[in-house]
Every structure is written in structure tokens, then in C-alpha cells.
Image 1 (cartoon, one colour):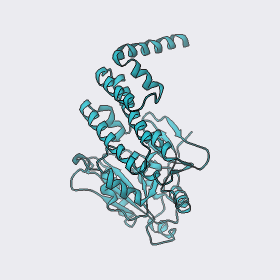
Image 2 (cartoon, rainbow, N blue to C red):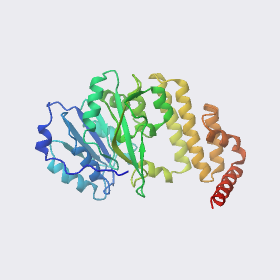
Image 3 (cartoon, rainbow, N blue to C red):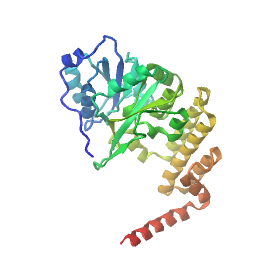
Image 4 (cartoon, one colour):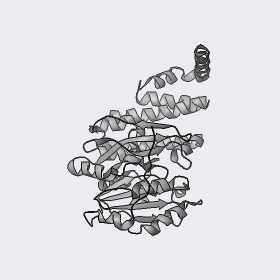
Amino acid sequence: MTINKLINPLPEKEIIKKWNSEEVFVSVICCTYNQEKYIEDTILGVLCQDTPYRYEFIIHDDCSTDSTSDIIKKYADNYPKIIKHIIPAKNIYSQGLKPSINAFSFSIGNYIALCEGDDFWVDDKKIKKQVDILEERKDIDICFSAAYTLEPDGKENIIARNKNIFVASLSEVIRQGGAYMPTASLLFRRNVAIEFKKYFEKAPVGDYYYQILGSISNGAVYLPDITCVYRINALGSWSSSRLIIDENKLIKELTSHEEHLLKLIKLGANKDDINFVISDLYRIRSNECFLLKKWDIAKKLIEKSWLLHKKINRNQQKLHQYRKFLYILHYREKIKKIIKKIKLR
């Protein structure tokens, strides 16, 4: 398995010649901060798009302190009719605001596509394929696709849900969690972003809420083609920042998630589905604390998870069963691993 990056985009004039309309169909939004190692891959993946649909590329640079801004400027100077390089007066994220919402305010496209500054596209027909599908399926608001994952050590994997095009139900999208739809694969109608800004501007992480809001009408259409690469725990990504989160921030984040997820019930989501995913969220964080030997907080979180929705999976059942003696479970699991290694010799 080899990831083939998109390189050597056409000059701006040649890209524009392929567009069949003056109307901006797609606004590609990229939020970045100190991602000098990755941002060029992101930019090239977008500029290499072969599509008749006019698109704009909004790169929201949240006051990077490395060479990220210089790299963006180089391309923005060469593609001034495509790239909008947005640099706020102050870092948006540090003020508790979402860079994606600020970036959205500069967009005019009928569709929104996302690609963070550490991810990149590998299919030059990505925009065309996804817009074609949603133009045909007027009843559906969001499209996602298969994707590669790329770990820091270079290990590659594939996230694929099916070999064929299919429509995932709202319940499936909710219960599978935020990782179900790779963020860099998303393309959705503008109304989804408008609804997001209205209800979820303060949500801890936006990607999952885009997925659910986009699926509320009639589910989400899946494209089996691998269109993008998601870097796991890349430097500067939100995922990597989770590794150093403290206990107070963890509780605050979980409370905020719960409050925002409950809002989805009024918008059309099933209550049992929402309770399931909130329960699973507490279970995931409990397991993280368990692995870090933070027994007390792990116990509180798994009890909350169990109260919301029982028996969601084996991990939850095991943590709840041993909630008063998590240290015993920890060493029991450790001994099991040692025995397994001995047997393999």
C-alpha cells in the first residue's frame, strides 16, 4: 500500500478554464496553525483538483509562528483567484473560538469541503465526484468517503465502510462516533455550516457535529473511493493535544459535549442514540484514565457511562465490573499480556 500524493498543479489560468460556471460551487476550508511540515501537501491536494465546478480555497492561518504562513503566501501569490489566505489579528483558538467558523464567514460556496492543515487529498476528482453525487441526491446534505490513515512512524491503513456507494443512516452516524467519517473526506451543503454556527459554535470539537447535522435530513452518502489522508496524532493536531489534557479540562470537555449532544434531540436525533454516544464518550475517557492509572476519575466516568446506557460494549462492562478495584484489573491485564508473550516464544 502506497499513498500517492497529488503534485504539480496546473497554473491558475488552466484550472479556471475547466470551470463551467462563474458561480462558486465549493468552498474548501483549511484551518491550520504551526503545520509547516504538512501544509504544502494540503495545498497541493486542493490545487490539483480536476473539476468543472468552480471552487475557492480558504486557508485560515491562526497566527502561526513557524514558516506555515510563508508557505501559504507563496501559493496564494500564484493562485490569487483561488486562494484566500486569512490571518486574524490574534490567535482565534486561544480566545475559545473556532477557526472554522471564522473561515466560514469568508466563504461563498454552495458546498463546503474540509481539509485540516495536517491532512491532504489524494484524488484529483474528489470535488467532482462528491458534488456530482449531491447534485443528483438533492435529499441528502453530506457526502464522505474512504480514506487512508498515516501514523507518525509512516504506517498506513485504510478506513473503508463498504465496497459500494451507500447511504449511512443518522443512527449509524451518531453511534459510530466522530471517527466514522474522516474529516478530510467531508463535503456538505452550506446550510449544514449555517446550522452548526447557530447551535454548536461552542462545542468542544466541531467535526462530529458537522457529520450529525449533515445526516439529520436523510443520512449521509458514502463514496468508496479513497480521496484523502488523515494524519494520526500529527504535530499541532487536536488529536495529539488530547494526550496531555488535564483532569479539570477533561471534565469540562465532557460536560460541554453532553450539553451539545443533547441539543441534537430537538433537531431530530433519536434520544437513545444520543444517550448511547454520550455513554460511549464517558467510557472512552474512563478507559484513557484507566490506562494512565487515574483510578478515581476512571471510576467516576465509567459509573456515569453505565448510568446513561448499559452494556454498550465489553470494555464498558469490564470497567464497570471492576470500578472499585481498577488497579486489580490493570495488573490482571498486564499479567495476561506477559503470559501471551511467553506462549508465543
